Image (cartoon, rainbow, N blue to C red; front, side, top):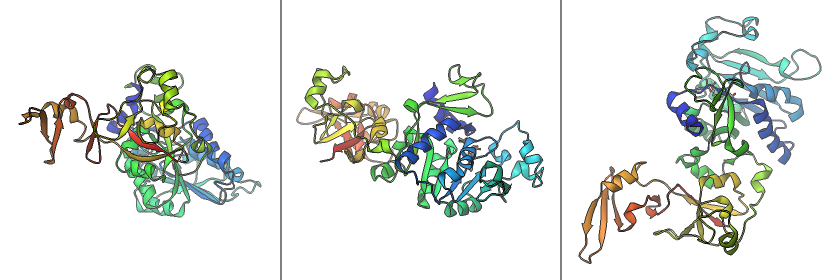
Length: 391
Ligand SMILES: C[S@@+](CC[C@H](N)C(=O)[O-])C[C@H]1O[C@@H](n2cnc3c(N)ncnc32)[C@H](O)[C@@H]1O
């Protein structure tokens, strides 16, 4: 159930999940460990945020001097646009001379930290200045785009329902970034080419992909064990950070066994004593588990998408990834096939796709699910990333 939550959030446009301070800290520390000056002299933009509720602004404001930041900007999205029903402005807002009861509902806010406003000798969260934006703080608005263009690094947990658009918004401006998303986003046609070309990779990550967010709004639709009443946290599986900032784990090679040793000693019954199957129509072996990648195989290997969490670009190159040949419902379409009997006594199935393409599959392959690589059908049950060992 938990693993469906991100996609449910997407459908219901429920974007009010707030990242925990410790998760931000753990992730950002991984970049600092790799390069202590990664943020020095930089302007960081935290869009889709709200310091009153979110920890991103708190974390970076508290570490402003420590990280050597030049400027911190965060923007929040208007309450009315968020479609939150029960909401009260905080004392932080109402007691500020900038407070405006109308704008408080309809406008986003901008928070800026770049100098010691209270002149107490240090720059920290107490020095954060804010005002209302002209619009609702939509990241796609011209005023937030301008802030994006001013920034060096963009960091946030963006609205899950707008992940593709949000990533495209960063990429078009060629910015550095650290953002949270669902591992499945890897398969999006806009996302995978970035990963393949090493323009984006997975960050340090949540523990085993399990992330716990503070939920604001309706909690009733979550099952026990998914939303926890005591902690106020909702659990999502398959969560990861996407980034183009370097970190150490990315350069740690996987320690792997040879093919022979895998066949002898693998902990996976699919491999031990069985070996590796070749795809029917494509010159690659199927490797069902990342830890079963044979260290001495030089050809192409189809590995699970979760491999990317362990991907070290010095150890492997990414060749491509599979896609479903005709939308998601390929198997159903296969079963709607017409069987043709050929003059040479073979049988083949002919399926006409919506786009008019004709897929011909020789028996007995038709009862297996297929994925496609560059028009070639691959007898894999799950989507696969095709990799090859670097020489
Ligand atoms: C997943 S929450 C994360 C909040 C915060 N960044 C955090 O991690 O704690 C995404 C936030 O984006 C806001 N949002 C939704 N659509 C937006 C848009 N078009 N532009 C800017 N913010 C948006 C939501 O209201 C929500 O507060």
